[in-house]
Length: 370
Image (cartoon, rainbow, N blue to C red; front, side):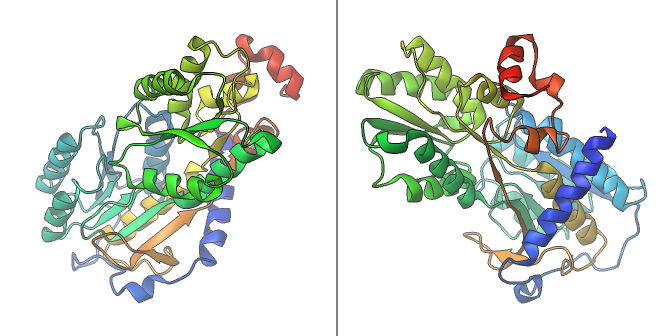
């Protein structure tokens, strides 16, 4: 990771920690802030890292290297990270957890493919004295800690942005809602936040829960919506993330839209940022990955060493199965063409050269991205 990204990671992590201080509740109230593994351990520990899929760019490009780097920093380079990607297969992820339990890792960081399906594996880990940090998605079962973004706020940010884009024409037609996968608890929170902003202010013509978050499934859903509603009736699209926004925009272009309606997104993927520059996608949600990764690493290392989380997790959340889980929730930012320079470029996520390839040079020039 370059120097700029390292500085950004430190700066954003500091911001997130300040934000978390204002959150309600405390780790002390949960009654379960430390590992149950017994004797304290040194830096020579093994952390299992399980990520859900490799379709979304963030996991391999940002989360994995950021978590590995932070764990190394926290343990003077002595810790070992064992990595597995489930490629959107919940059964495979359960097998990966079993393997890590067999290999006696000291703690697990798990971003669940399916928050319910992972519960049995979390129980197995706990039974073997291995603490589990739920990363990005609130896994069910007896998890020890959780870090993510304020996912309901993500939906609010997306809904507000779509209303802003529609302006006075918000009820002149119908919008399509392209939600995420029902197996992802975050998708329900995004939807809840977005609907709180949109319901009563727009007409929702069609709504989909998109299987596996796949762009091709969003593309097929959008084609069905265009057929059902007619292209002249669709004035906007709520897309829960950037990958799906890409599939949606492809369908809109193929469906004969000469002027694209505003489309939302999330994750600030490079392709999404480039579509924003080009005027094809209205916005994305920028989620600073560095503080989320740092929190996961800090909690996993502390738990592996048998330490308490009081100084790291300043708030708690309740899952369907576990109450008072020590948590760090990271704030998010609405990303539009107006603040690309002050967000993903300033934080070192992308350079101007990354975004402004020859295809986008003219649009970048128009926005002053040079």
